[in-house]
Image (cartoon, rainbow, N blue to C red; front, top):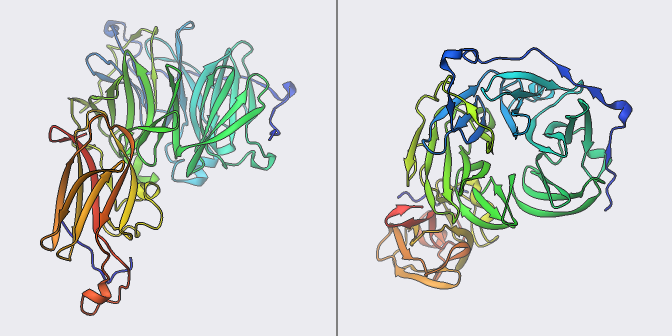
Length: 482
């Protein structure tokens, strides 16, 4: 345990769809066929239940054997996904560029398209309008139309599958926000006579609800931070608050995944959450990812490691859409870890030195992050955490250079630990979680007094009031982080 150098400073919206005269016929271009797609001798049917888009590949996953196969990998970044079981095709968004997330010139020049794949994962068509699809995100199939969210232009492209024409919808309430990435829209979902649209906002996010088919804005509500995905199950609206690594249900924290969750599906009684590295944009394409699997009660089933795929963007069920995949290559190095975590994505924890925890802390009760943690600034310093189902112990790693500091830890106002530092240094305090306590909770760390480095350490000019230095918080089940 290291303690940092104390001398270091540390309305009614104006919405519109383009007129019918502005619609354009679909441009059909030569199909891109996987190298092995025409090998009749290799044809075979596998129970691939989920499709996954990543920075490098379109993947398909068998949820019984956890086999992962590569369906396509030559179209830049893959994002949107939706299956048309009646037509027997899978629509997949392809940006046809890999550098857009970190190169603004490349992003502005993107000409994305929607690949159409058959049951052998061969690309049989490539749908593209005569206007650019830039920074494509999620896609959904609804009312005979293919809806594709395009963040760069703050726009949703709408392809009518019956007429073959394209249209554009600009959902932003203010006309000046059209054609520029203001809200970073990323997910669209129909529900109960409405269209639900996620506005990422590159910070605190929003859920915008529109009447359908009129497209009047009904309301906008706060929902997570850097939020992605919408999943409706048993009337509950789930989403991923990616920045703070949390699954939300009806805007309330349900499960803490850590890292950067994006890509979300429910299939055959289980939740599947894509977990990617929290990393700068230019470094993301070279990372590995994992699919974390939970039972319906959110207890952990395990993790599927996906090496060298970059980030996971969307996960979609393929129910009722049998796929012939024996001819497709398996993803090298993919592995399933039952009941635990893979080495590249360890069990989640709240790292107090990370900016991901900034929004979870009670303002003014904590100092800024420094090194691998941060100091409490008040005798009572609180933060929001999520106690995952199955958790039995709360663990807090903390330190102080001062002997005699007395510390109390409370969870949801219930005392769970009380101790004194008999000597300078660090310790990991494990506390029993009160029975039945799960979901979003308040963790409070109390000290009997604050100390001042300039009055305690010779030569220090640091006049701040400090409590204890907190590095990490996590929960455990039977000695294992969860």
